[in-house]
Structures are given as C-alpha cells and as structure tokens.
Length: 263
Image (cartoon, rainbow, N blue to C red; front, side, top):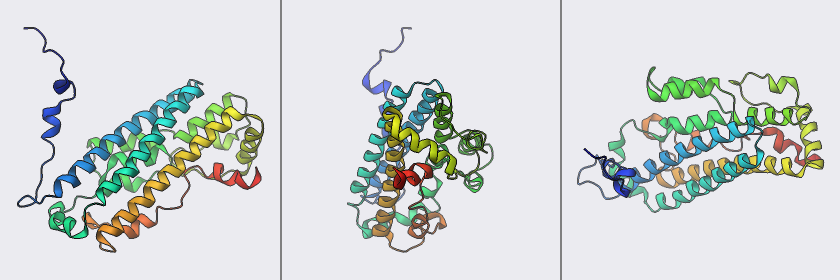
C-alpha cells in the first residue's frame, strides 16, 4: 500500500487539532471557545520559545553568535505576539468569563509547566514549581531536567569566557539550580565589553530586550487578570492578581541592568 500523500490537513494534523477544543459549560457558553483557543495557542507558542531558547544555548556553545542573535530576535517577536493575544482575551467581559469560570474547577494558568520551563531556562527556578506536578508525569520530568540544566545566562557567560573575556570563576562554576545573582566583578567585564565590542554589546542588548519582553508579558497578564476577576482568588486556589504582582520588576539578567548607570 502506497504511503498517504502529504496534504496540508494531514501534515498539520488539522482534524486532531480542531477536536481539541472541548467546552465544559452548559449550552455551551459562547466565550468558553475563545478562552480555550487562546490558551492552547499560548501553549504552542511556549513550546516554540523553548525550542528557540535551546537553540540559542546550543549556538552559543558552538561559538556562533550571529545565528544565536537571530534566534533571540525570533523569541522577541513571539513575545510581542503573546502580549498582543491578551488584547483578544480582554474582549471578554468579567460577566462573560463568569458564565463558565466554575467549569474550570482547579484548572489554572498557574499549572502551565511550559511557562515554568521558560522561567527555569531564564534562571528563575523553583523546587516548589516541580512539586506541583505528579512524579513521573511529562511535566514533572521536563521541569526536573531543566532545573538541573544551565540557563541561557550561563551559556552566554561561557561564550564570553571562550572569547577571552574575564568572566569570574564564581559565575562560570555557580550552582545552576540557584537564582542568578548580580556580580560586581562581572559588571566590570560587561562595561569593558560595551565600550570596545559593539557586536557582543548588541547581543547583550537583545538579552535586555528579552528581559523587558518577559516583564511586559507579566505586566499585561496582571492587568488582564485584574480586569477580568479583580481581586478574586484565582482558579485552582491561587492568589490571582496578588500573586502575579509579586512577579513584576524582578530582572532576569540583573548585571545587564546594573551597568546602565556606569556606561
């Protein structure tokens, strides 16, 4: 039997994809479809961002800064799409969300393991985040793996060290499961880099863009939640907007922000 001809439909698994929007509300409520589609699309974009971040790390380890910077630009473009999608979600009024919210039961965006994976890749790691998923599950396994791996920042510092920059040994040998901490010695090296190496300074700026892009996403996410449910407890028992507010204004790459006043 000859292999099935490749078509748009079977290559993209369109039939399977369109069967994944399963509404739970009675009726069902009209706006539940939007809610499901938006969040499924988010998860697909998170998958792509993780794919690109892993590629950036591999390219930095291969000392290929130009292609690494290209992938960073792609991640930044995807982040802009993620933020723009909130405009669509905000077309749903609080009453429209309430019409099916109880059907979500314990389900919450707080349980997105792919977003937690992205946080881990960027250095914001948490043992507690791993423990929210059952041992042996895909999510738990993926998070544990990323928890033990180096971050994007670690890959960038390795790259700078190979290029002859004086990256402190304490930074190159740091515990990759710990939070990235600012380093005065590293900042002195970065200031020198900015002053005499425009190409690598440009890569630093793309990392700052990434940091700012994640902050923009967090801010818009907080405002969307406040606009939709106000100060109510989030689905799944999370603190809702109050928790999300605690994630704002925390830099991912603190050294790249600290050097601004010295340049």
